[in-house]
Structure formats: structure tokens, C-alpha cells
Image (cartoon, rainbow, N blue to C red; front, side, top):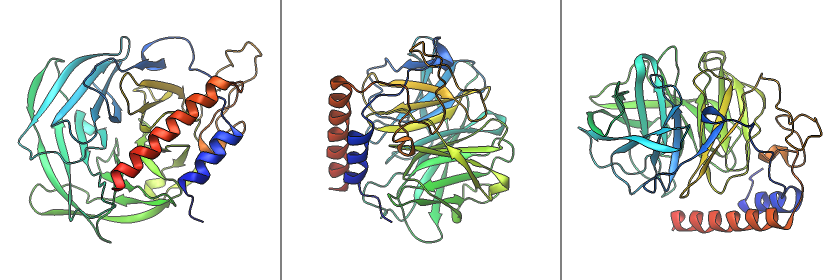
Length: 330
């Protein structure tokens, strides 16, 4: 059954306006705030392989060929990378790091509902030194076997290096598999191999490649990978965010970090599936579990109290999100 935004918003406000419990005390991989005023539409997130505690992010459409390295201990940008050797980015929606410390950027968004005849992937080596610099990237053309579509999730398997895309549809999309090796000459054809029961805005592989985490605006699912024959394993404890569009595992695989568009946006850390749940900060000692509490199917955690402030924040964020969706579709 098709899930409309109005229905999701109604459930969110009527059933679970309480905000989720905050991340465990600490810094770095326990969450941070993006403090760079240039980062206003963080649409993807990936943990660095070479620099502990550093996360890569980028803006949505309208910024340019830029990639930002953010120190999670301070929330400050420590390097801005300018991509050279590519065309003008159209709608960069995802970032992932594959084998041999290669960064992949997915210029795969389509605000016109899937009308671009092709989209692009950019690949560049992760810089060994963090400083503002220009790096040459390789550009790949991507097409889908069943025609153009909108997508915001690009993932690279950490063992095989194969690239996958999940398209973005309100009533659920599909996992698309690319060729074993991308080619810089000609189009790379991606084919659907498995359904994904989520309005997906980003996804991430666990460092060992055994799990796939997929997030949406109002919830998330994690799958056992099984060589691409994905099997649903459970729900993710996705925090409530104004326009949640990024997710990544921490480098050690113990945390999932969730980012959102907006200036000074917060990156929230949650225990990755398989870890013992963190204790509630209320002092009650009750655990916060993935998928627990009212509205857990929409990514709303338990443990918060219902307050007027929470209702106002939720209503304002939903209104902003609705306006943005209408602007994009227009």
C-alpha cells in the first residue's frame, strides 16, 4: 500500500512526538554538530578509513564539486576537497568508501522524479593529508535497466568493491547492482536485484560487509547481506531529524551515525545492530532498543517524554520538509 507523506506525518505527530533519547555521553564517534557554515545540505556521510574520527560529507545540489572532511571531535571542517576532471555536479546525494581507500560520490539524485537519461558516479582516492586541495576524480556514467529514476543511496561493498544504488520511492524501492568493475568509457548498467521496503534516503555497509543499513526520513531497516540476496534482519533506531539524509557505520562498526540537512545540523550516533543497547540517560536503567516504543516503525525511539517543545519541533520540521518536497517536485 502506498504510504503518503500526510499519513506518515500524522503518525509521527499523533503517536510519537517525544524525541529519542540522546546518544551516549562522549565525543567523536558518539555524535557531533556540523559547524561549517558552508555545509547547509549534508546529504551523505562516510567514516574515513585513513583518519580516525573524521567523516566525509557533501552538500546537495547547488554547491559545486566539493567534499568536506569533518573532525567529529570538534565538528569543524579540516579539509575541503575540490574534484577535478569531472563535469558540473547536478545532484550529489551519497558518499561511500570502498576498498583501497577509494571515495565514491553518487551524483544520482533526480528532483524531477526520474527523468535524467543518465546519472554519474565520481571516484577519487582518499587524501592522505587533510588540507584544502584539488584531487583528480574519475567520472562514470550510470544508467538503469528499467529506465531513469531518483536515488539518494549509493554503497560500495568493502570487500568486493562492487557499487550498488537504492532508488527512492515512497512505497519502497529496489537495490540495484552495478557491473563487477565500473568502466569510465560507455555507460555502466545497473539492474534491480532485490526489493527494499523503505523510502530510502541513504544506506551503508558494515565494515565487514555482512550487513546493510538503510535509512529513510522516518525509519530504517537493516539487512543481512548474503551476497546481495538481502534478508531483512530488523529495524534501525533512527533518530527524528528535520530531513534525515545520511547514514554511515563508524570505522570500527560499533555505531551508526545519522546526519541531516540544515545549517548546524546534528550528527546523531546510535548503537549498531548487534551491540547491547545503551542505558537510558533518564536514570531509570531501562534500555533503549532498536525498534522499541511507540512509532518505532517510523524510526522514533522510546525513552523520551511528550512535551509541548517536542511537538513544536516536530511540527516545524515536518512543515519545512513538506515545503522542500513541494519545491523539489515543482
